[in-house]
Each structure stands twice: as C-alpha cells, then as structure tokens.
Length: 149
Image (cartoon, rainbow, N blue to C red; front, top):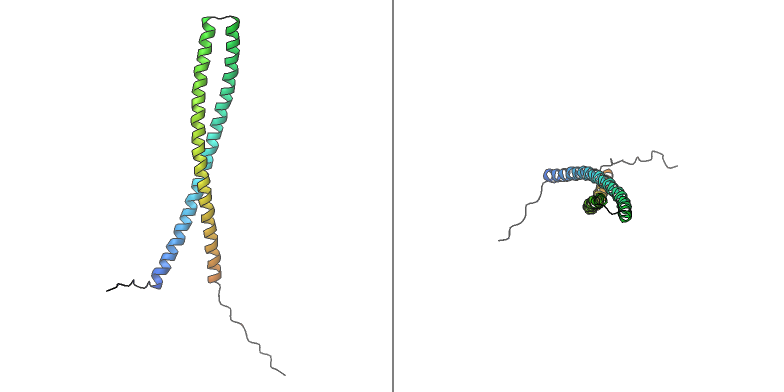
C-alpha cells in the first residue's frame, strides 16, 4: 500500500514561512558582520604588508651601503654588520611572504562573503516586494450613482 504525505495545514505553513524569513534576516545580519570583520582584517594585512615592504627597502639600502663600506675597508665589524642586515632582511622577507599569503586567503573569503551578501539582499528585497503585493488591502470599486438620462 502506498503511503501518501499528509497535507500541510495553514498554520504550519504560515509558521514555516515566518521562520524562513527570520532565518534569512539572521543570515543577512551575520553576513554583514562577517564582511565588516573581513574588510578590517584585509586592511590590517595591507598595512602590515606596507610596513614590511618599507622595512625591506630600508634594509636593502642599508645592505648596499654596508657592502660598499666593506669593499673599501674589509674588517670584522663591517662583515658582522652585513651578516646582521642579511639575517634581518631574510626575516622580513619571510614575514612579508606570510602576510601576502594570508591576504590572498582573506581576500578570497571576502569575495565569497560579498557574493553571498548580495544574494541575501536580493532575496530579502524580492520577499519584501512580494509581501507588499500580497498584503495590499482590497479596495472595492464604488458604483456610479448617476442615473442615465
């Protein structure tokens, strides 16, 4: 014997619609918060990358000057200076590479979040427009009271 699905009742259907709209609203709010946080994280990483690039530029110039000084008069202090600068430069390059990799991940997540937020807002606008149309009060047309002559 084939079992048939029970027919849904109006109250249950209304409750399902209401919960779905509330879930959409909550998702939209959560997406907005997530986008805001990812933008802040992206900006923070951008500032960190700029800082590392500036430090790298300074160290590169300092390294060239130290090498020039070492070529003029090779001594242990100059060699030690070159080694210290090279070590610090390597650390900065590693940190820069790490920050850039993090930024790529954050940017990919941000793009996905923005797309999802766009979809959510489009769904919310469509539901709002449909509700306006469906909940519009019915206006009865008045009959003309003029008599035909």
